[in-house]
Length: 352
Ligand code: DP6
Image 1 (cartoon, rainbow, N blue to C red):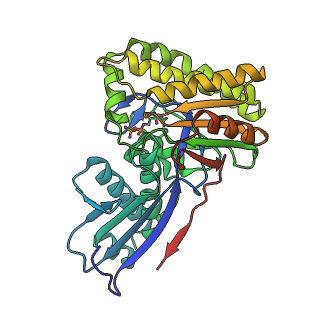
Image 2 (tube, helix red, strand yellow):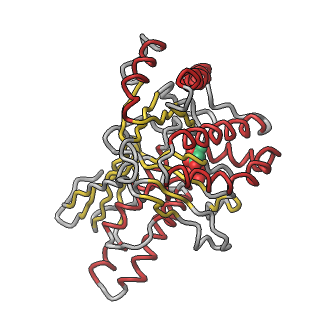
């Protein structure tokens, strides 16, 4: 970034990732990012995985600029532009008589974002990144209100990272996407002994991003059409399991949905394969643990990548970690990243 002068104003925010339990896969509108189905996620704590974004404006900046993990990015990105213009529009709507704010809206913008975890490796980095950018911009321009619709314009799953706890993204019906937004189902205090372990199987960038993967599925997969018919029932079932803190059902619904997503990916033509041999081994191991236990002790979920999110209850964490160490003895020390879930949307904001 250019060095700051007295005229520069900047703000730094952190944002959490969220992991979908009932996944979003497929859009009905690519530009507005309107999904074909509603989805439900849980927001994770920011201790291990978070995006951090600094946004700055100054009358001395010559042009808009952006850096991601230290590397300059092009500003010619339709989603980025859509997020920035939507935040500015909201700001203009509310503060049209405030000259100071109006000045700020004219100044060039610098954005600097970094993740403390592998980017684009199926660990929901775009969700955290866009949620963070929208939040930071809203603070910079002094805008409040429902930010989830704007985060959605950056990356669909980002709209769920605006809230903590368990969150639903209602697909909405309106053509313009006015009702396609996220809302909290229950807060982070509802199920405090739920935990997630993230198994980082690979930190490599995925070969097919979610955007392209789901677009190809919409065009070619019949199984996706069938999945869409079943999703509303699964959403109701998991909401019920969450309300009742029924881990056994929660685990089964979560695993079935993850499996269905990856079955749809394989039904896509040409197929998109996100899971590796290690991912498949983890799936088998989880089922073996659950079978031995005569009830579900642990559940897996995989996004568009090989890395596993394992859900379990606090009391079972030592047992499951012992089993993982036994089966993956020489793995990288970062292989298992422990987290507490669900987490509050623990926003940390630094003002100048
Ligand atoms: C498998 O939100 O990354 O993680 O809206 O095109 O940016 P775009 O896609 P993105 O897709 C996420 C897919 C998923 C499932 C989910 O998070 O619901």
